[in-house]
Structures are given as structure tokens and as C-alpha cells.
Amino acid sequence: MAVFSAYNFGCRLNQAELSSWIREFKNRGFIYSPKKDNIDFLIVHTCTLTRRADSEIRRLIRHLKREKPNLKIIVAGCMVHTHREFFKKNNVDLILDNNEKNDLVDKTIKYFNLQSDIPTVKQGKYLSRGFLKIADGCNYGCTYCIIPYVRGKAVSISEDRIENNLKSLIEKGYREIVITGVNIAFYKMEEGIKNGFLNLLKRLVKVRGDFYLRLTSLDPRLMNDKLVDFLINEDKIASHFHISIQNGSEKVLKRMGRWVPIKKYYEILEKLNKKRDVLLSADYIVGFSGEDDVEFEKGRKFLENSQLNYLHIFRFSPRGGTPAAKMKHPPQRIAKERYDILKEFHRKRYGDFISSKIGKELRAILISKNRALTENYINTKISFSTQESGDIVNVKIIKEENLRAVGEIL
Image 1 (tube, rainbow, N blue to C red):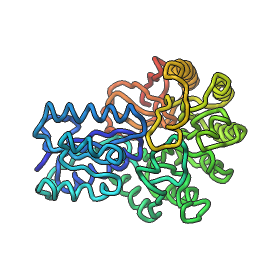
Image 2 (image 1 turned 90 degrees about the vertical axis):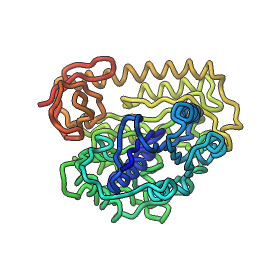
Image 3 (image 1 turned 60 degrees about the vertical axis):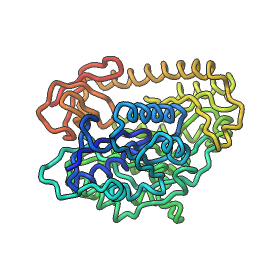
Image 4 (image 1 turned 45 degrees about the vertical axis):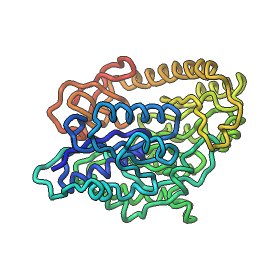
């Protein structure tokens, strides 16, 4: 039976899709190997959100074709929409964009004439955490974002299918389930259902089992009081919320096409901060079009006055075909200086957050034999554990060490 491996680039939605393909291949009897040696075929799930992602993927494909010319390669996802000719010129075997990838497993088996059979041995999980896709696409038009062009309009998966997929993940032993989608809080809104995401969460937390749900990329424009109250009071919702804030200057946000009163940001973060031991993280773009020293300073002050503990900071990367690509933006040198300032802010905030949890007992998932990820997103080094990767454990934080925690399993 064929052995395969995979690379994932980009968001947790990509991880969810790749996890689904890997599970289906394994169910058909194929053997997944995390190592890239001695494999028969390789899946590369691509991202084109930034120039850096494009560059890394191009470099990987060239390297694979040079070092392993006989390896069968399947490329799928967002970058196919913008770089199909590159993949053709580099002799990628099977190329599937977002409109073609839904039947990736069947297409791969047919294209390479692979033999599929019922597995004879039990195979381990691809990842220690499960990924639950609830929707795809986006109906917004942020001026910098290429995702609506490559993933299309918002489409929500049915509640019945999502619940069944959640039950399947739990049966396979996953205890932390990450809910993914381009804009998860928009769930069912394309159908005119205002509280679709809240209704879905209320249904999912009733599923039997020892698990919790981690939420990613929450859009503050779609977070009302009912949703926030549910999130902070439901025990099966992890004490970590990742918010798509993007910037702290109202003028910059307006040019981004996602204007939000900064007052609303503060209000949402203050409410979410009431959840026990919660970590509040956010995406933040620096060096966007029109960001001068005044606007950067406004954003920096917002961050300092906010209750955010963790930042994913990105330097603005113009994407061809988007309105922002035509705007004038700060030189890369200045953007890099501003990035470094905010990176230092992040290090201080996150380090202080970890230190504030010393002596506390936190729910966590085992990522490996000597590493755990707490419910509130603290990467924790532990003594060697005999428990299975993916198990829920209780960890006591002992100290902070270079933006990681050192802890012990109780």
C-alpha cells in the first residue's frame, strides 16, 4: 500500500482541510508518514495570503523536483489560483484549485492509478488537535485580502454534518477541537440567519465527550452581547480567543475596508477578559497603506491600553488584484522598524501573561511526550509523559522561560 506525506501552508482552515484528506486516505488503507523520505506521493496545501508564503512554496517545489524528481506531487489550494502556470512549468503532477480540491482523495487515486484497500493496521493521529471546518469563503471585501478571490463567497456547512464530524473527531480520540473557517462568526449569515454561529456552538457543546472547542479568527464586527456572554460562560469553550483586529487606528481600518470604532474593540476585549485565565490574541498588520507615524502611534497606544496578551504581527504584503496593492504604503525599512517595536511589545505582554499563571493548574492537551499546550494557549515544556499525544491533562505552571512555560503534569 502506498505511503504518503503532506505539507501545510497557511491558516487553520487549511489544516482542517488537510487533516480531512489525510484521514480519508488512511481510511482507504494508505499509510501516512510525517517524514518525507521513502514516500510514494506528497500533498502540498498552499496559501497565497502573503508574498512570503508564495516564496516558501515556490522554493519547496523547486527543491522537491530537484532532489526527488520521481516523487508524485499533488498541489492544492489558494496559490493554485494565482500561480497555476508556475506549478505547470515545474512539472507538478496534479494541480487542484479551491474549486477542484473537494474530491482530492478520489482524484489522486484515479490520477496515479493507486490501489485503495481497507487498512490492516491502526494508524495514529495526524495531529494532536482536531480541526473542524464549519464554512468556507468570505462575503467581505477587505482591501488588502485576496482570500475572497481565491476561496469565493461564504458557504456554511450544515449543522448536522458539522455535528457528525465533531463526533467522528471525538471517537478518534481528539480532545481539543479547533473550529475553522475564513470568518467563523459569519456562519449562516449568507442565508440571513443572524445568530447562526451562536446557535451552532450551543448545539456542539451538547455533544457527549471529554473535549473542548478552540475558536480562531473571530470578527469583532460580528460579536454581539449574546455571543460574548455564551463564550465566557461555557466551560467547553477554551479560555483563548483570537480576534481579527488587524489595526488599532480607525483611519487605517477605514482604508482596510473594515472600519470598527476603537471603542467597540475595547468593549469586546473587556467582556471576553472576564473568562477565567483567558488569553486574548489578535492579528495585527503593520506598515499598511497610508500608515504614517501618527497612525502607527495611535495603533500602538491602542495595544498598550487593551487587554490583548498575544499578537500575530504581519508586515503588510500587497497582493496583486486587491485595491490596497494600488495604494501607497510605507517603505519596507519603516515597516520593519514598526514590526520590531510591536514584536517587542508582544514578547513583554505574553511573557507577563505566562508569569501571571505560575503556580496555577491549567487544562492542557499533550502535543508530544514532553510538550503540552494549555487551554489558554501557553506552550509548556513538561517532563516525559507516558500518556498519549492529544490527551487532556492538568498542568501546573512552574516558571516562564523564553516565552514558554515550564510545568508539571498533576
